[in-house]
Amino acid sequence: MIEKIWFENHPLKYLVWPLLWPLSLLFGVISQSKRRQYQAGKKQAYKAPVPIVVVGNITAGGNGKTPVVVWLVEQLQRLGYRPGVVSRGYGAKAPYYPLVLDADTPAKYCGDEPKLIHRRTGAPVAVDPVRANAVKALLDTGVDIIITDDGLQHYALERDIELVIVDGNRRFGNENLIPLGPLREGVERLADVDFIITNGGHAHQGEIAMYLTPSKAINLKSKQQVDVAELKDLVAFAGIGHPPRFFHTLNVMNADVKVTKGFADHQDFDQQELETLAQQGANVIMTEKDAVKCDSYAQDNWWYLPVSAQFEPTDAERILKRIKEVKATYGSPSA
Image 1 (cartoon, rainbow, N blue to C red):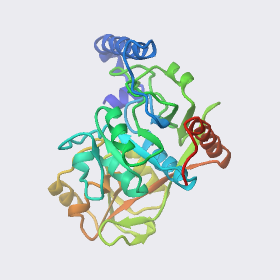
Image 2: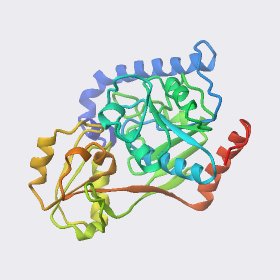
Image 3: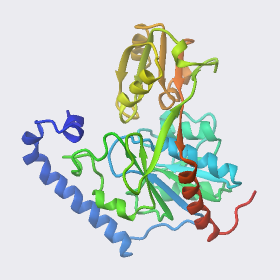
């Protein structure tokens, strides 16, 4: 129902407005006050000795940040940089912080998105609720540029470049602040960022269009790759910010989907529940983010669908050029 109020102009909004509007007003006052304190130097922010690139958003929920982080890491690696990634590890609980990931770090310790990023790119990844501590931990690994997955509102960490990801279809919903609307900050915040990247839909003036391109489905156990359309009688599930986006992608790919099930973003799955769900079809298909949490008990007929961020070459070059310019002020990259 919250989704309907935020993004679909549901009539119930008139009932909740008297209750939620004062809370949204208070949220905005606190949020703006916090930012101003850091801007005025009343609160000390950590300045890293390497460039910091923030990939975030101004709305609650998933907009496609992680594919952009993966794209940035891969592009920077090709250019000879040594990028690292930091995250707060939302939805996870590590035995200690900061936690620097390795191949065996379970998603329940680091979170699904950091695990995915580390597995896809091989780049150093660290998680800590205090992102400055995660940055400091990565400095020991020899990184020369750091990307923070989310954290646009984490002003305790100074940043050099800000990229905001916008859901091109849902945009900013009713444009109210949490909890009446989906906004973490007002839309006027966009005037201060370096790039606005629009995921799907229609990019507005001054925005960069980005699309998520799916590849072949990958088997969680055998790593076999097949076209999604070849998999019959599919049970599809997604624990992401907006599960219908995943189901729509499957439909566009002519997938034979019989059952769909959406879960909360970052949800820690119950193995028995997923196994019961899987019995409703011949194959199971999930997102790559979900797959990193299911590796240990995946069955032979479980598959995931990776997606990659795609940009027009001129737009990609604009982003990378800006990063190169900032990096040059810190020193030349090592090959």
